[in-house]
Length: 133
Image (tube, rainbow, N blue to C red):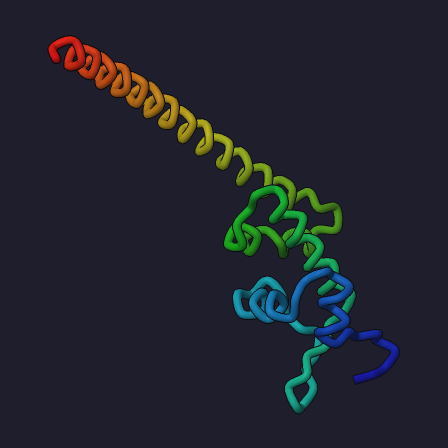
């Protein structure tokens, strides 16, 4: 390892990216992040791209993407400097989320209507029962 590469240890990476060590290890396990270099005793060292990847992961999570979805698109941002390919894929995912959300809202509105009808029916039955007392 050469000092001129300015590699970061996991603690430094965690601090710069504002995440925990556990998060970094988890992202490594699921393939979202890779150390730039490993030392013989198991220490991991990370480069500046690791910081950028963690920042991109946080940005994509804030848009509502799951970690699986992020795994599908994150490399596109680093393969294409313009970011266009990544953004196109994220747009497709977000549009699918919107369609799914609208369908769920429709189901919820139907359920709301059914609940209102059920409540009205029970109130009517109760009112009739009170009259017969």
